[in-house]
Amino acid sequence: MTIDGMPRLTPQERAERRRVQAELAADLKASGALDGVFARIDAGEPLTGDSGVLGGMLKAALERGLEAELTDHVGYDKGALDAAEYDNSRNGHYAKMNPPGVSGDSRAWEGWSHAGRFNEAVPAGAEAAGCTDGRGDRG
Image 1: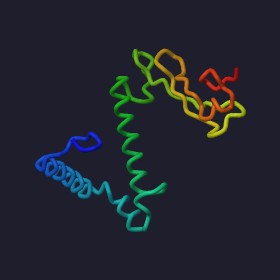
Image 2 (image 1 turned 180 degrees about the vertical axis):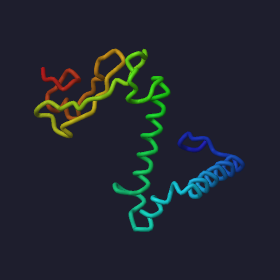
Image 3 (image 1 turned 90 degrees about the horizontal axis):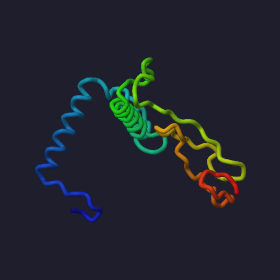
C-alpha cells in the first residue's frame, strides 16, 4: 500500500494497464473520433483550465456514463413514453433559491427522493444568517 491507501500496481499490472490504454488510444485515433479534439489542440486551445479541451471531454464522458448508469438502474431510457409504468423513476431536480439574507450562490440544485420529498440541504451561510432548521428557514 502507498501512503494514501491506494494499492501499488505490480510491474505486470502497470504494463497491462499501459497496453490497454495504448490500444484504446490507437482505436480512437484510427476511427477519427479524436479528429475534432486534435483540431482544437492544433489551433492552440488549452488542454487544461476552465476552458480546457480535456475538461470538456471529461465532462461529456462522465455525463454520458452517468446517464447510462441511471438508465440501467431505472430500467428505461430518458424520455421514454412508458416511464410511468416502471416502479423506479427519474425524479428530476429543480432550482432552489436561498432565502433572503443568505450569502453565496443564489441557486442550488435539489434532487427529489424516491419518496417524493426533496433532499434537504443546508444552504451555504445559512447558520451565519440565523437559520436554525437546516433548510434555510429562520426561527
